[in-house]
Amino acid sequence: QKEVEQNSGPLSVPEGAIASLNCTYSDRGSQSFFWYRQYSGKSPELIMSIYSNGDKEDGRFTAQLNKASQYVSLLIRDSQPSDSATYLCAVKKNTGNQFYFGTGTSLTVIP
Amino acid sequence: DGGITQSPKYLFRKEGQNVTLSCEQNLNHDAMYWYRQDPGQGLRLIYYSQIVNDFQKGDIAEGYSVSREKKESFPLTVTSAQKNPTAFYLCATKGQGSGANVLTFGAGSRLTVL
Image 1: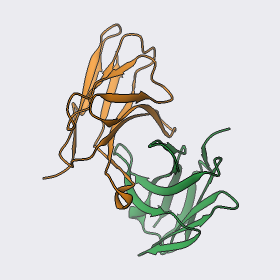
Image 2: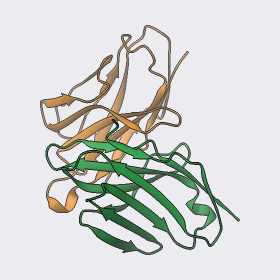
Image 3: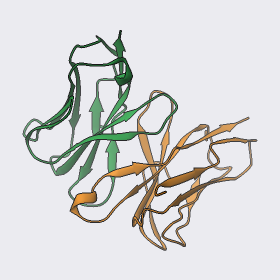
């Protein structure tokens, strides 16, 4: 069983719509959760981190965490063509310093 | 100008050759990581180091070696034992303390075996 699983997509949404990206993880001991954005040919950049159950909002981005269901999601409101990228979900367990990544979801925002 | 510098950005290697990828950081971060990314796949951990002169194998360490002689530097050697080394290699660091529990990535090095 993979540590982190994402729907690889691709996901296409029209400009201005809400994009919803999902991620599940296998270890209930995980405590830290991250969403990274990766443009083609570039390195990942951090968008959001979330550590507690519930929602965390930052501009057009909202991360949602449900530890009971072992589920993390990222909502992108008012999607823009510049949001077109691969989104990587990452999880860090409570012990140790290893981060585990999903395979990423490719998002295309259509103008 | 703080950050993580990876070099070279692009590297071509003939089969049977060892190559070393450089990763230097001036963020004063203790932990450093090497990940490999193949097309359509996520990041897979090769090695990581939490302090100078100490490092641990990740999930795909075979065919790779590292050293951590200085806090600022964590070079990765791709040896001839690595059977399929063509990939995008990413170096990352993590700071200390509860407010720095995130990975920061360098720009990456793309290795192609001819």
